Length: 314
Length: 302
Image (cartoon, rainbow over all chains, first blue to last red; front, side, top):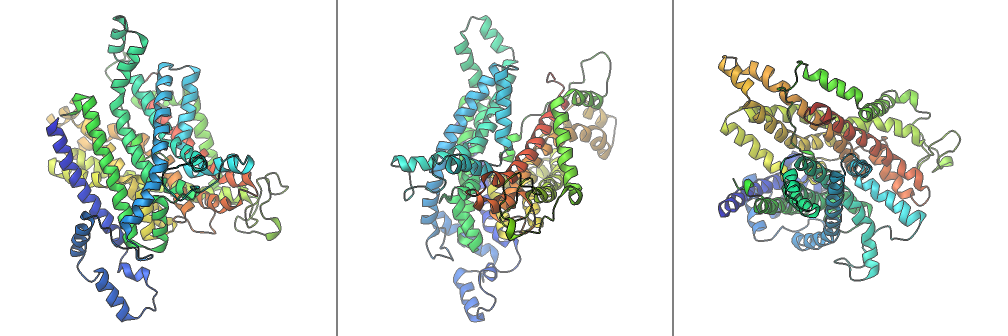
């Protein structure tokens, strides 16, 4: 097990290294100097040259990358070229707001998906199963930004019972009922896709396990239904966990559209603003941090899978 | 929209050992499809959507770009404008019909290109030696480390809005998962007896790829690619929704959704229509992929 963890850790470090190259190199997809798109064309030459030196854009790319990586490893993501504020601090508070949305959405989506998927598999071919299949495929076919708008139309416009946008307070975890009310619609919106995806994978995995011989053998041994469900679920857990890890990453990185719909000041909106302001340090920093989160979540999922299923520790 | 990688499920190869009478694999698949009413219906709906998009100039009742301040935000059922009008008085039905062109092209093209590129890379990685495999798959691992939405938005944000850039960024997003699927399919097929037999009978590599490996890999790739089209349509509309994709005044579903978002307090039903078009199309592609998957997977009872 220890060897497995060490190997996975090494692999993760390599991946993170690659991720940092992509996050840094992203801005160089377009030819020319990153400052050129930022500055007006009539900017005086001396100023442009001075800024180039100041930001280090006059040095070769690999030197720029190493300098950037060195600063990032010390927790310094640079300074926003638009606001002049430190990226790290701003990004952390935006990420906090994203977590306020993503964690309840993940909990809701995963628990609903697992429960419904298991129920559907144990009632294979019956009405419940068919109903679930419809809900699940709708969940994955629905653009969540549209679902958000539709929910706003129903619950904030036609029946004004819930707030349409914003966080209510000044950010952070909700402390009162009004702030919690602001969470309801975005959390439901965000949980739909994980629900559909997890539900489908749980259903198909449980069905596959039920078609194997051991559940029948367990039944023949006189095991109670409840205990058998436990055995089956334990076997279905590793693939479901892998998908949950991917979905958690999606909730963090993909919440940008839902955050736009609900005007939620999270990391997605932070990045969106950076794109339109051409704020390179913010864009690089956000992409790097969100992708790194995703990589680390997947590492944790791998380890968790190996803990549940020893066969994975090859 | 689901993360692309979550569609990845093991695709079981057809079990050709059973059965007294030999039947071609594809005739079995065709027969299953003919009896699968849901997939047939989905195919018909999809065909309608595609035909409407192709014949948009005939299906549209008005000019999709011509608005009028006199008829802004008319509700559904207005005479002459049966799905209403948008925020600058353009006919919603005509814009939806024309919008299907851009939305379908932006959804299908990136997946098709990614299948071509990713499929080739995956095949090479699957057949090639350790070094080739390592080189391709480690690069893929890095791109896989980015949530698909994040990567698409970041690339599009850097290279700028526009139809071509949307398709390029989505192609980059979809290539790594296709490489992974093709590589694992190829690796599965590579070690099977009939490939060994072909190799033992001194068949050249290109012949083995063409006759033994490709036919057994293509089906899985096709099913996987179809499931990606649904996501691709949602993502490309999402990019337009953020202002990073198709640019106004072009009719495109995501862009229309964003423009009409300001009107939800005036005319909520009309504001929801472009989204409905996205749901319908992506739902059809997902159901089609499910249907193909079960029709091609002979081990599943149909």
